[in-house]
Length: 149
Length: 313
Image (tube, rainbow over all chains, first blue to last red; front, side):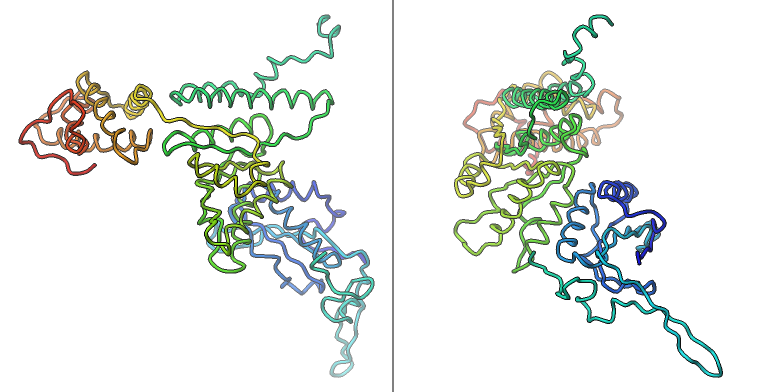
């Protein structure tokens, strides 16, 4: 099941050229751009791992593309997203956030039901991928990320 | 129209030159930079080469992206930074860099203080400079041959990698004294082979320095009177004899100090006219320390006796 979230969730995956254009738009607005990755893409998991700190004072999207590609290389079977942070109000606010990379195989979610008090039923989403330990989810052969590749 | 059709393979070089607005930049360079004839010729050559390279690309001739990294050598104040900024504009107009911006960096910005500090620091500067020009002032400080564990080497390696692999994203300009730059290249042959253009900035002659001074003064809406002009020339002769003479930079500093003395003189006496506020006379210049410390040159005028002499340089 193809997971979508963030700004362009109703569009097909962006090409590198389209990503570059979006990042250029962010930089022209004076936003800082950061790259984050995770292998736990539950919609309520807002805290993805940071691929380095947000990049401030950039002038050109080439630098962001370089980091995105480095992250893709290190984590080919993770989700990677690009965030744009706006500081005009005195604090950093996310203005744009979109997925730029996804694992080849996405097993999707199952609906879990829990019997509550009386005859109440509580529903929750459970990602099949999270049955495996962190770092081994989504990889085809079960091996972890290869940082040296 | 018929001619164009008949010869539709022909490209209009003049038109391409006009479209790029490059002559405008080159003219400003000619106008604003005094002297430096060799440098200007070289920049025109580079601009012409890049334009032709772009035309070749348009007609589908083989055109590998030219190496654009440069090395500017020369003493302080000979216009290296100014030319680098113009170079950024030229490269931008010709479409070789995406942004008309220049990031200046020195050793402090690139080299870290402990293990693992250098790489992120260098990468951050490189990322900031992406799409434009990275100007590394006094680049030879990156390499310290006396200390083999110096982190500068790490910065150079990262720099080399980006200079080679991301040529379309970044143009690197190295700058510094000629002899030390040569030594730096001899220790880092990889760096030399990746720098395509070596430009040497000669020292200015006294006439060129006078021209620079006149331009600076006029820009700030002051002017020298006849005696002041002569005195300033004399001042320059003495100043050039002193060590650490910084060419155009010294001229700028001297003018700043002359403005202070001018203000002090005008402040002292009753009513002033507009002319008084703009005119610099010889007494403003004669109070300089230089006239005391370099006595061997024959002064055109004697400093006024008994007057308090300015101790500042």
